[in-house]
Length: 98
Image (cartoon, rainbow, N blue to C red; front, side):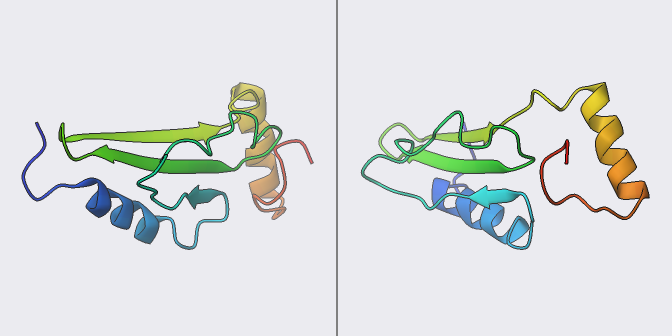
C-alpha cells in the first residue's frame, strides 16, 4: 500500500518536473477517460526516445506507470555506439545508429 500522501497526480507531477528538459523522455498527459489508450508500442522504434504514462484508479488506490521505448539497440553494441557518440561530441540526439 502506498502512503496517504502519494497519488497518481503527485507521481505525474514529479515525473513531469524531473523530465521537463530531457531530450528523449516525454511524460504523457494524464487522462481520466482512457489514460493508456494512446500508448503505441512501436512509436519509438529506431530512436532513443521514451514515453512515460501514469494511470491511477482512485477506487482501488492503484497506480500504474507505463514506459514505452525501443530497447532493441540497447545492448552492448548500442551502448558502444552511444558512448562513441558522446566521446566524439556527437551528443545523444538522433537514433543510436546515426
